[in-house]
Amino acid sequence: MKQALLVIDAQQELIEGNASEAAVYNKEGLLQNINMVIEKAKHAEASIVFVRDVDVSEGKGVGFEVHSAINVPKDAKVFDKQATNAFYNTPLLSYLKDENIGHLVLMGCKTEHCIDTALRFATVSGFDVTLVEDGHSTSDSEVLKAEQIISHHNKVLHGHYNVDHFSVVRKTDEDLFAPIHDNYRSE
Image (cartoon, rainbow, N blue to C red):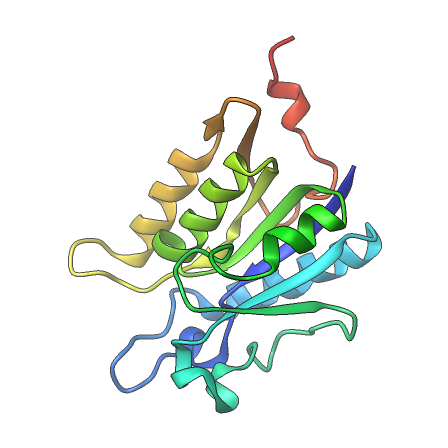
């Protein structure tokens, strides 16, 4: 089965914050883990895809770009989006289908928005998804601390099941490109 690493909204201004938005929780750890998983993806010969949100930094300049500390491979695909859903009105789904991708490893920002939405959409679109437990982040909301939001999503999205395809949550140091979804499928 072909695989892809999907890194969503790992953009300079979104991760670092700005005058009106706080930086994401554990940004240094997030950046380190994204780079580690990029190396794993290259070793596994998985496609590497970045999605950028045009709402970040008004869709231009350094703040809009993938974070400068992330080692973006030259052959990585980059798609821009306007909605919370990385698949909405973008060529992402067509690209993944054309490449015969069956398994997505998912990382990026923000947990309760674009990560949650992409994972749920992917499972109903024919993909098994591995969410990297320590590879997504957000900032505090008015109700919950970022760490609580991340923990909650890691719990509810592990085993998220949409009949044929589902998600599992695994840590950066696991063999993320050796999918374990079949271990949970009923015969």
